[in-house]
Image (cartoon, rainbow, N blue to C red; front, top):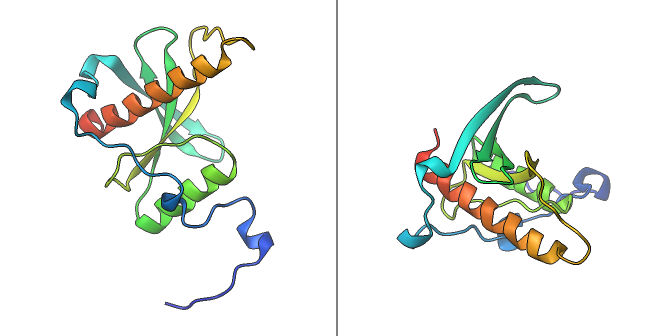
Length: 141
Protein backbone atom coordinates (compact mmCIF):
# COMPACT_ATOMS: atom_id res chain seq x y z
CA UNK A 1 0.00 0.00 0.00
CA UNK A 2 1.37 3.37 -1.01
CA UNK A 3 0.98 6.21 1.50
CA UNK A 4 0.67 9.74 0.17
CA UNK A 5 -0.41 13.12 1.46
CA UNK A 6 -3.89 14.34 0.42
CA UNK A 7 -4.36 17.93 -0.65
CA UNK A 8 -7.26 20.05 0.62
CA UNK A 9 -8.74 20.01 -2.89
CA UNK A 10 -8.73 16.19 -2.96
CA UNK A 11 -10.18 15.94 0.52
CA UNK A 12 -12.92 18.53 0.03
CA UNK A 13 -15.46 18.30 2.83
CA UNK A 14 -14.73 14.62 3.49
CA UNK A 15 -14.05 13.52 7.07
CA UNK A 16 -11.06 11.22 7.49
CA UNK A 17 -11.47 8.14 9.71
CA UNK A 18 -15.25 8.65 9.95
CA UNK A 19 -15.92 5.61 12.16
CA UNK A 20 -13.90 7.30 14.91
CA UNK A 21 -16.44 10.15 14.82
CA UNK A 22 -19.62 8.11 14.35
CA UNK A 23 -19.99 4.77 16.04
CA UNK A 24 -22.67 2.48 14.67
CA UNK A 25 -25.76 1.54 16.65
CA UNK A 26 -26.15 -1.88 18.25
CA UNK A 27 -28.89 -4.46 17.88
CA UNK A 28 -28.52 -6.22 21.23
CA UNK A 29 -31.72 -5.21 23.03
CA UNK A 30 -34.62 -7.28 21.71
CA UNK A 31 -37.12 -4.73 23.07
CA UNK A 32 -35.82 -2.00 20.77
CA UNK A 33 -35.97 -4.07 17.58
CA UNK A 34 -38.57 -3.08 14.95
CA UNK A 35 -41.20 -5.43 13.58
CA UNK A 36 -41.30 -6.42 9.91
CA UNK A 37 -44.47 -4.37 9.32
CA UNK A 38 -42.88 -1.12 10.64
CA UNK A 39 -41.19 -0.31 7.29
CA UNK A 40 -41.46 -1.04 3.57
CA UNK A 41 -38.84 -0.90 0.81
CA UNK A 42 -39.36 1.14 -2.35
CA UNK A 43 -37.00 1.18 -5.33
CA UNK A 44 -36.71 4.29 -7.49
CA UNK A 45 -35.38 3.30 -10.91
CA UNK A 46 -33.02 5.32 -13.09
CA UNK A 47 -32.36 8.19 -10.69
CA UNK A 48 -30.04 10.58 -12.61
CA UNK A 49 -26.42 10.01 -11.60
CA UNK A 50 -27.32 7.21 -9.20
CA UNK A 51 -29.15 4.43 -11.06
CA UNK A 52 -31.56 2.47 -8.87
CA UNK A 53 -32.06 3.82 -5.33
CA UNK A 54 -33.54 1.81 -2.46
CA UNK A 55 -35.66 3.64 0.10
CA UNK A 56 -37.00 2.49 3.46
CA UNK A 57 -40.40 4.06 4.14
CA UNK A 58 -42.01 4.03 7.57
CA UNK A 59 -45.56 2.71 7.78
CA UNK A 60 -46.58 5.07 10.62
CA UNK A 61 -47.30 8.77 10.10
CA UNK A 62 -45.51 10.92 9.08
CA UNK A 63 -44.07 8.04 6.98
CA UNK A 64 -40.41 9.02 7.12
CA UNK A 65 -38.22 8.06 4.15
CA UNK A 66 -34.61 6.88 4.43
CA UNK A 67 -32.13 6.10 1.66
CA UNK A 68 -30.08 2.91 1.82
CA UNK A 69 -26.54 3.42 0.58
CA UNK A 70 -25.08 -0.02 -0.08
CA UNK A 71 -21.30 -0.45 -0.13
CA UNK A 72 -19.14 -3.24 -1.50
CA UNK A 73 -15.99 -2.78 0.61
CA UNK A 74 -14.71 -1.27 3.83
CA UNK A 75 -12.93 1.46 1.83
CA UNK A 76 -16.12 2.38 -0.04
CA UNK A 77 -18.05 2.41 3.25
CA UNK A 78 -15.52 4.77 4.87
CA UNK A 79 -15.48 6.99 1.77
CA UNK A 80 -19.28 7.35 1.71
CA UNK A 81 -19.53 7.82 5.49
CA UNK A 82 -16.73 10.41 5.46
CA UNK A 83 -18.42 12.31 2.63
CA UNK A 84 -21.81 12.27 4.38
CA UNK A 85 -20.31 13.50 7.65
CA UNK A 86 -18.38 16.20 5.77
CA UNK A 87 -21.67 17.33 4.20
CA UNK A 88 -23.15 17.60 7.74
CA UNK A 89 -25.66 14.85 7.01
CA UNK A 90 -26.79 12.55 9.79
CA UNK A 91 -26.07 8.99 8.59
CA UNK A 92 -26.22 5.85 10.72
CA UNK A 93 -25.11 2.25 10.37
CA UNK A 94 -25.27 -0.91 12.44
CA UNK A 95 -22.08 -1.69 14.33
CA UNK A 96 -20.19 -4.48 12.61
CA UNK A 97 -22.05 -4.05 9.31
CA UNK A 98 -20.04 -2.16 6.73
CA UNK A 99 -22.30 -2.96 3.79
CA UNK A 100 -24.93 -0.21 4.21
CA UNK A 101 -25.54 3.29 5.54
CA UNK A 102 -28.96 4.85 6.24
CA UNK A 103 -29.68 8.55 5.57
CA UNK A 104 -32.89 10.51 6.25
CA UNK A 105 -34.46 11.89 3.06
CA UNK A 106 -37.81 13.34 4.13
CA UNK A 107 -41.42 12.45 4.93
CA UNK A 108 -44.40 11.41 2.85
CA UNK A 109 -46.67 12.97 5.46
CA UNK A 110 -46.46 16.18 7.48
CA UNK A 111 -43.73 16.30 10.14
CA UNK A 112 -45.10 19.49 11.69
CA UNK A 113 -41.76 21.02 12.66
CA UNK A 114 -41.79 24.57 14.02
CA UNK A 115 -39.21 26.79 15.65
CA UNK A 116 -40.62 25.81 19.03
CA UNK A 117 -40.53 22.01 18.55
CA UNK A 118 -37.68 21.42 16.07
CA UNK A 119 -35.41 19.74 18.66
CA UNK A 120 -38.12 17.21 19.46
CA UNK A 121 -38.69 16.58 15.74
CA UNK A 122 -34.95 16.02 15.16
CA UNK A 123 -34.95 13.53 18.04
CA UNK A 124 -37.90 11.70 16.45
CA UNK A 125 -36.15 11.61 13.07
CA UNK A 126 -33.01 10.14 14.66
CA UNK A 127 -35.00 7.52 16.59
CA UNK A 128 -36.88 6.47 13.43
CA UNK A 129 -33.62 6.48 11.41
CA UNK A 130 -32.03 4.14 13.96
CA UNK A 131 -35.04 1.85 13.77
CA UNK A 132 -34.83 1.86 9.95
CA UNK A 133 -31.18 0.77 10.19
CA UNK A 134 -32.07 -2.03 12.62
CA UNK A 135 -34.97 -3.06 10.36
CA UNK A 136 -32.68 -3.28 7.30
CA UNK A 137 -30.17 -5.26 9.38
CA UNK A 138 -32.90 -7.77 10.28
CA UNK A 139 -35.11 -7.90 7.17
CA UNK A 140 -33.16 -6.27 4.31
CA UNK A 141 -31.69 -8.00 1.29
